[in-house]
Structures are given as structure tokens and as C-alpha cells.
Length: 100
Image (cartoon, rainbow, N blue to C red; front, side, top):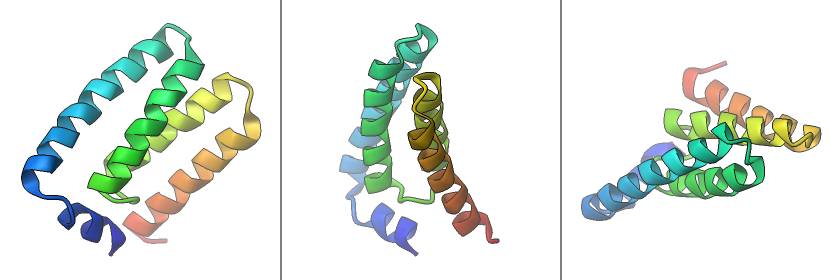
């Protein structure tokens, strides 16, 4: 499946560095979100999402969790259509991972 393929295409040392970067970025995004700086949080969460898709694949639980955060940022900003898109993508990934 695509998540396994993406995971195996990154060498272990590079994966470890990306995982550290992802963790730091997630903390920064959460701080922005908690401070109601949703635009800044969204920018960081979208970068995290890109890295997670590269490292873990599109249907990993980490990627799915970040899609929820992206959706919440859009929701808090009143960008309803973008929030729905993020949640639909999240739902699709859950269905692909767990089965329909």
C-alpha cells in the first residue's frame, strides 16, 4: 500500500531527523493554536502534514491526526469548505486504513 511504500523509501537516519522535526513543529503549531493564532498554526500543521505524508504515508495515524488539526484551524478561521475538505480527507484515510 502507499503508506508502506512511502515509509520504506526514506532511509532510517533521514527518517529519524524528520521525526524530530515533525515533533518540534507539532509542538510549535499546538502553541500557536492554544494562543488562538490559527493562521500560524495552520501553516505549521500543513508543513507537518507534508512531512508525515513523505515519511509515514497518507493513511498513517499520525497523518490522520494532523488532518484533524488542519480541519480545526480552518474551522476556527471560519473557512468551512476547507475544514470540510480536511475532514473528508481524514475520513477517507481512516476508511482506507481500517476498512469500510
